Image (cartoon, rainbow, N blue to C red; front, top):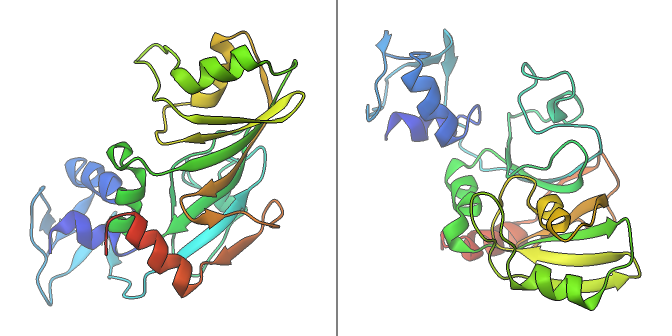
Length: 231
């Protein structure tokens, strides 16, 4: 097994973060500095920052309602890290981000392959949000949001946008640019006052409250894996 996959299956880092740790020479394989592409065989020892790693055999997937004010980063990197609020016996990584001023559903897992599949934009996985803005939503605004909005890096993909009330709407994205919804709204001179993610693919937030978490059912995990193209 490739060493980055071994590390991701330990539940400590995602595969991308594992690659970064390897390049930073933070990983040792059998006592030597590991290099990208190393293979881990039965009986090998792997250390990250001089701490031994072992694979977690059970794949865990959790739905977590991230409250406002928490950030998607490591506990060591930020005093407002979600990991100071969310705890689980096994280290779980968040799949996709929500910024500090946003709330709602995060999928948390120790399954690096599933996380990678969900996050890859080319697979077009749906994420649904409820958004409130600072002035009435017009049909012109909704039409513009649906059609693709020119941002600095590129024009956003066409998406589904449905009115929810006089000053709110639901939006379903299949990509995840940085602060995308806020920037899309700003293009039309709207300011987001409330943003909540309510669904990731087949996983719904339902009646969860901020700070709540639950393990997904076996049926939910199977469907999530199917939608992610793993089965």
